[in-house]
Length: 186
Ligand SMILES: CC(C)(COP(=O)(O)OP(=O)(O)OC[C@H]1O[C@@H](n2cnc3c(N)ncnc32)[C@H](O)[C@@H]1OP(=O)(O)O)[C@@H](O)C(=O)NCCC(=O)NCCS
Image 1 (spheres, rainbow, N blue to C red):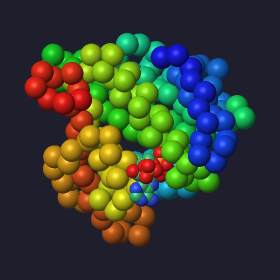
Image 2: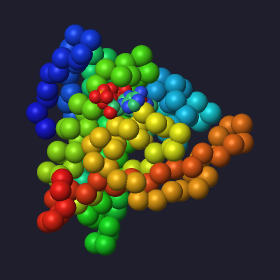
Image 3: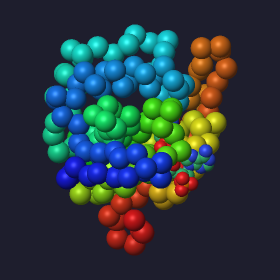
């Protein structure tokens, strides 16, 4: 994907581009802040923080035609990310990819996730995936609204998807967006 410059409704200028190995330290700092700010990811503040070495290894493992990560930057700091990962390389599953997205809390509601969604959906389609799958907590209204507005459809419920630190359970919604399939609107 070609790097893009975008102007937010706040007037702030951000860049959206694919992540590279040189972003590793910035990504570690970004993820550690993001995971401390929200309970919506499997990784949270209760888990060990990310470290540079494992992030470099992870980024290297993602540098292929079946995985992609884009980031949003403001003044060269990472403030958002979106990833697609192949579900599996097995023949029966290789038409599917999985998706995740995040934006630092102080930048929510500025349209940053929406701008990254446009790019990551185009990338997934270009990479030949037929569908994008994700799981979102039922309580995550902001993300549910975002996904619905980009054509993701709810296809099932994962009961007790997360068990939170205080012992209560959160159900997950399985959502899918179909791409490239004849007869299905992208
Ligand atoms: C979910 C998340 C990525 C949204 O990021 P964002 O940059 O605030 O989203 P945007 O501003 O681009 O909003 C895009 C669209 O989502 C919807 N949306 C966003 N905030 C909303 C809200 N508070 N109420 C209803 N809809 C909302 C709207 O349709 C919005 O379009 P609009 O601004 O034209 O109305 C962000 O809140 C986040 O990182 N949350 C924590 C991590 C997370 O939950 N990730 C998803 C895990 S499944």
